[in-house]
Image 1 (tube, rainbow, N blue to C red):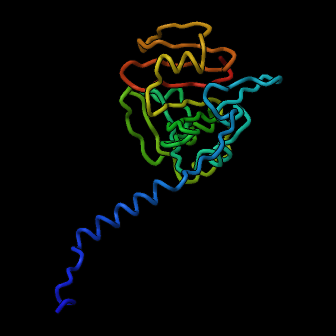
Image 2: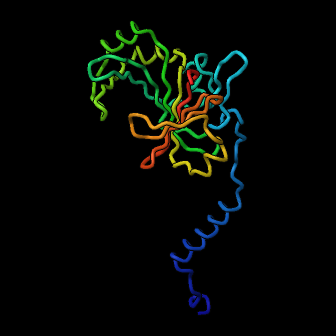
Image 3: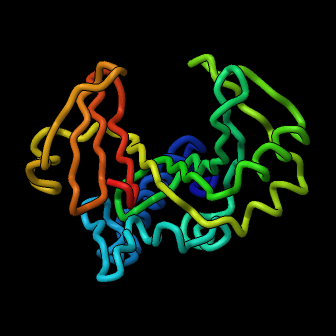
Length: 214
């Protein structure tokens, strides 16, 4: 009779206890943080003695897209862009999500190709679509995608997912060499020694553009 009066633990209580134990286990596990190469950080771009710009783990005009994929991952999209009349063609690769330490961002790189190559790619394009700015975006053929993996990178644009605060900019980048408001009505800050143009957009994320021409 005594055994028959024993109460079983309600199922919901078993689930609740299990949830607490699982939560305690997760809390007790130390997260693994990989050390970040200081040269990868956005504020540590620099020119070497030969005048090559090193930024975000890439050496402009030397690193290929294939090599960049070893750093940023294989989730990449290649596109050809032109003005609305088909002029000013450029090939770009876009990494939608990358992590540099604790920084989550997107990265776009421009690839070096001759005008003749770009024209041929344009003519072979699988699909042409208008962009919001009135330009055209061309989806490259599979063969051209493969061929462009070995093109070198001429410039990089980093777009952080979170806006940079004024304090963070001052602490990490310092005072720019000069500032100017351009046709896009946005403030552009230039750091010549870093090869960096920082575009300040009050309504959206900043864009950090690295080019050896700066």
